[in-house]
Length: 130
Image (tube, rainbow, N blue to C red; front, top):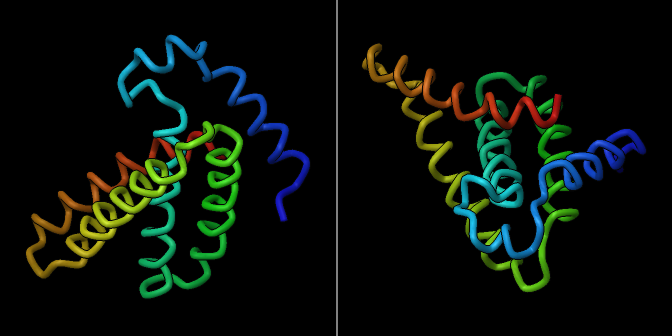
């Protein structure tokens, strides 16, 4: 269960980030908070599953972050957007899981590139939940 602090943060983020309805429709996905929250939820799910393999205790913190992000998704979701939001989450999870798998590659250069890219993608998500 999420704390009051998490709910207050979610509400504040929604009011700060959400443009008017017309602007929301006109903007691309990069400016859509719902898209950001959904993709971060997917990435955090992939990271949590990766951590189950390589760093079990870290997965508990990641689960908490994923749950907080899911609260933001639910707060920002527009009626009828459920299927699209789930697609964004799945696409982000699959892509991030692929990067994390590459980060365990025997090819050191490939592993470092994948780890660096995964870290960059998670930076935006971490800024929201931290």
